[in-house]
Every structure is written in C-alpha cells, then in structure tokens.
Length: 281
Ligand code: AMP
Image 1 (cartoon, rainbow, N blue to C red):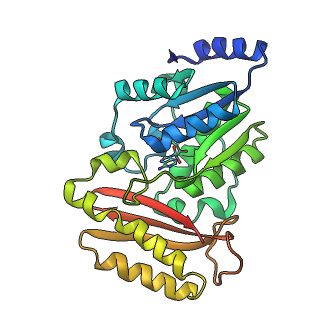
Image 2 (tube, protein in one colour):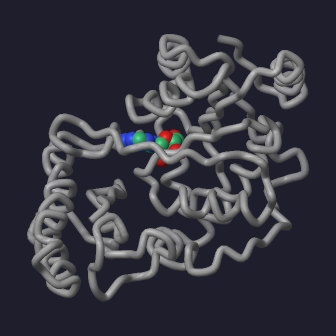
C-alpha cells in the first residue's frame, strides 16, 4: 500500500491508474478504523481495480470542539488494517493540504429538507462540513465509485444529492451497517465509552429491532412513544431524537405504507458520547 499526504503526489499516482484504464473505488474515513470501515474497503476491492482510502479528521464537520479534540486517532493500527484489507493507496492529508486557502466554504448547496432534520437539526453546520470535505476529496481522487456506510443514513442521502447538484461523475454506493455481536453499530466513538456505558449501549439496537418487529402492527405515533419511554428508562441515556422518516426525503412519516420506504433513526447521548443508529422498516 502506498501512503500519500499531498494532493499533487496523489494526482501522480492517479494519473498512472488512469493511463492504464484502471477503475478506482474510494472510501473516505476519519480513521480509528474498525470492521465497519473495512467492509467498505472489501466491497470497493470487489468492484474496482484499485482502492483508495482517505483518513482525515475533518475539523469543519465537528460542531462540538470537544468531540473533535477527543476523536480517537490510531494511525499505525489503521495502516496495518488497510494493508491487510488490500487497500492500494492511503491518502492522509493534513489540514493545510485540504484547506490551503482556509476552511471557509463559499459553496452553499440547496439540500432542501435533507439537511434540516435529525443530524442537521441537532448538529448545526455538520453537513456543510461534510459536503465541503467530501466534494474536495472526490475532486482530488475522482473515483468511479465511492463507498459510504448506511450507519450514517442521512449522510449518504446528502452526499447523493450533492453529487447530483455539483454534477460530480461518481457512483455513490451505500453499504450495510456492521454491528458488534451484541448489536451495537460499530463506530470509532464506541472506543470512548467506559465499561458501564458500553454495557448499556446495545439497548439502542434492541430498541430499533423491537420497533421494526412492531412496525407492521403499531402506529407511528405509538412507536415514537415507545422509543421515548425505553430510552428514558435507561439510566445515563438521553434521547436526542427518534424519527421515523421517509427514506427519500427524510421527512417524518405519519403512516407506514410498504416495506423499505421508511427508516427509523435514532441519536442517543450516553455520558459524553453521542451515538447514532438506524433500521429500515
Ligand atoms: P467515519 O470514519 O466515521 O467518517 O466513517 C467512514 C465511513 O465508514 C462512513 O461512510 C461511515 O458511514 C462508514 N461506517 C462507519 N461505521 C460503520 C459501520 N458500523 N458499518 C458500516 N459502515 C460504517
């Protein structure tokens, strides 16, 4: 695996791939890699000639400076995991490489309702930062396909909308959520949970599974009440939001019609750590 930090060096490698007609799959990450990230690398590997992974803890998408400060970083282990997974190029830019002119972002995209709900509402500016960095990374890597996890359901919807609006020629591939044995969605932030919090965290997926099981027979209103009650009863857990949303618009649905059209999304504060998860209904 080749590791590059600077965009001009990356461009040299990429032009070599282009000349040989090699198809490139791209996996953008913030590092502290776990099997969820590696599943994206495997999928990219299966569908492309070359795989590029980026690791960049993007400051502009953190609305909480403390979250940015404590975000886990484990560069050596990440390098080893990516090498083992067969990644070809690891792109690890620094802030000055991605934002040579500073972090201000002049482009305002009309993301409509997608950016106003859930994570958009709870984390002001978060998706502006995501759009900013993903557009810059796609411009630097110009892959044929880019891979994102359904764990960040709203992010995938926003990235799809962004590439449409900016006419970026890339196919966005959404990949399934990888979970721990007890159901907790894998996340770099899980490493920050203490033992007690970690023991409580599987309650989130247990709740989502229950919601899904009941969704054929229970009204949306009652499902929301159930979610609020369950999380409210778990000591140390605070519900940020629970929404049953249309998979396309991400707006709340009043009624569940056919299967796969709605998604239950949740964000929970557990101690200092904020966890998100979702399930298709
Ligand atoms: P992050 O490093 O958290 O920015 O994540 C990088 C990519 O990995 C994003 O597209 C995430 O949605 C995806 N990802 C994170 N956790 C998981 C997971 N448990 N399963 C599948 N994909 C994931």
